[in-house]
Length: 207
Length: 228
Image (spheres, rainbow over the protein chains, first blue to last red):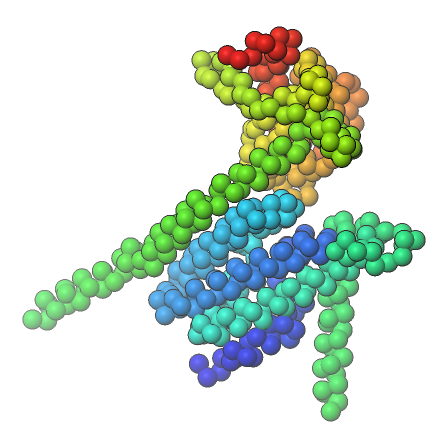
């Protein structure tokens, strides 16, 4: 297991070098669906972080008991449990937000990001490494969601968290908070991320 | 000697390969998670119910008066008085209980009724509130409490714009869902790509109204008789 990344490397990689949305292009359903406001995006990122952390820790604890052909069942079972807990908590303590997010909270169960982390990291490495991996990936996911949500909310409504950022004469680009805005924003940001990657790799080649 | 040892190892191999033994972790985890989720559900369900009830109570005046008017009234402290009732209907020898909310203006004049109803949607149960005037002759509004319809298509039943077409619809006949623009007074425009969801909502309202319309009208005409 000497070739596995350490806890610190896992943590750092999750944030930008292996960002779940911009580099791995995983978990796009909520990325597109709930980024029309910053509040919804951050709640979604929080719920995903909770589920990812718990699922990674549980999977890592039982990693030596896993049978190869039954592991996906166990991952799904674990993830579904924590998603249900998150869903019930939102309904109890953030009722309006839970109605806004609607089916997208239960749909975290099928978010590839989480099952991917269970498979790649938690089922092979120690609890501490799995937890740092979950933390890094969660921060990366929150950054990705909030970057998209920030752009969409500011351009679409001229406001962020209910505060006006753009002058009153700004003609709200309503399309940005509608579904097409999600595709436009994600496409442009993904393109930018790829462009930065290419420029950087060219620089290292020239050196 | 060799034969007996081979049967033992065969037996133990068969034992090792048994499905139940292989899946012990799955079964154990499922039981454990099930118990944990039961605990969470028991701990949180009362709070979730309170949230739902609070939302219902907030929405009742909006359904009767319209959102803007209800806010004005709430601001001037002249909000409606709401009383919860249940109406029992005998239907094919089966008793069905409906929850309705009787609303009155502060001076005691009846403002209308809001009924809670539910039924099967495209994906899951749809639960909604709809309002009628005191005589139950026309609809005053519609609000969707709970739905799990397809995001982007069926969940448009919660859009204010779509729900608003129910306002002032007469209750004399069944409402009918049509595609491509409603014209008649009993017609409801279907959501593009979500005809089944649109029909579900309309059917829930039709059925509930058919069951309780007479009772509501008679209750409104003779308010003293309602204590039985």
